[in-house]
Length: 280
Ligand SMILES: O=C(O)CCC(=O)C(=O)O
Ligand SMILES: [Fe+2]
Image (tube, rainbow, N blue to C red):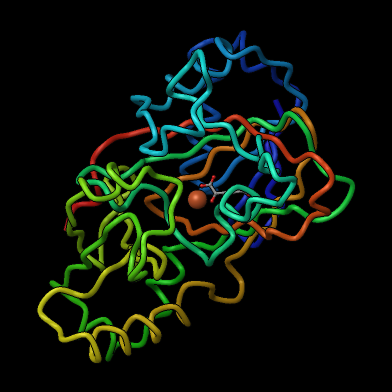
């Protein structure tokens, strides 16, 4: 097994392994590399759905994503990304084409127990574009000005699936969307496995910062967005078919580029993996 960091201290590539035949010692190396680099890409895999699920379960408990209409028909834990991009009228469905491309974010923070990890398996990759960008929450925290650290200590973000959008515009059914309740997470968190501090936040799903009026909250959100992608702590993943990529939602932000030729396929299987939210 070879592990090589490809980004700025974040993002590593692993070659020379078959994830379907890993013994515990080999998996422990992968898990350690994942904690060290936040995002890891195992190259060159040939997986069936059961292989992908079995390997993913080694990282934690698989959770069904609330977007029911993009679930794999036989495996509700698998979300299909990039499938049924064109509607019956032949029009590009931007909710599918641009999924995850709105802004840097962390997955599942609209739940009481956010996703610890998200793992994707690449089935089809376009000839150009379609990268995924990552940034470190650890560095985002480390580089926060002291003034902001003081101000944010003890502050909670309140999250909801649609964030600050005032109209229903999500992949959830209107009924499932309406049934969701806001949840809160500390903005300055602690990663429960590494013990390192993080700026845990995103502008896509946050509703407001608890205890602040809308103007104050929105101004602080804008300021925090500027802190999410510090220089020297980023990684751009250039996909290859057969890549299995897992990112740690507790210490990294990501966004899809959303820029590939729409007539080409970009298809992934995705699982959402749970554990507990970062402790305050
Ligand atoms: O398609 C991608 O590159 C990432 C999309 C995303 O944000 C996600 O799957 O959580
Ligand atoms: Fe995402």
